[in-house]
Length: 90
Image (cartoon, rainbow, N blue to C red; front, side):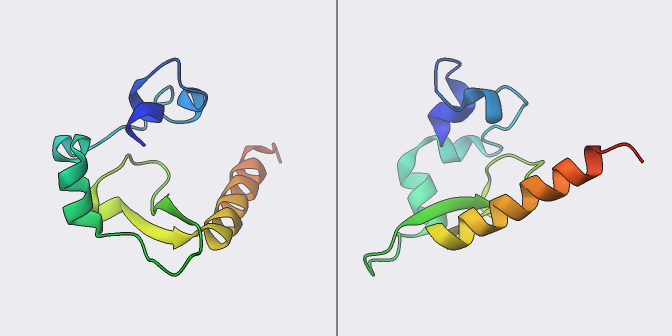
């Protein structure tokens, strides 16, 4: 999360740090603080992702949640389709 927002050599920097998505709360730069806010990931054996509730904002306690990977992918896909539809000239 931190690297893709701050490291211009990261594979996904162009999608996060490049357009200005960052870590809104400096406390979140320390894993211990992030873990205290987010809590441990579920231990049910499924894959989970960090999901930003508002894609236009960066990472902060109020703007992220832990989502099961397939649900996150579904929401991300809907978000991308909506963005694409908004960019189509009428």
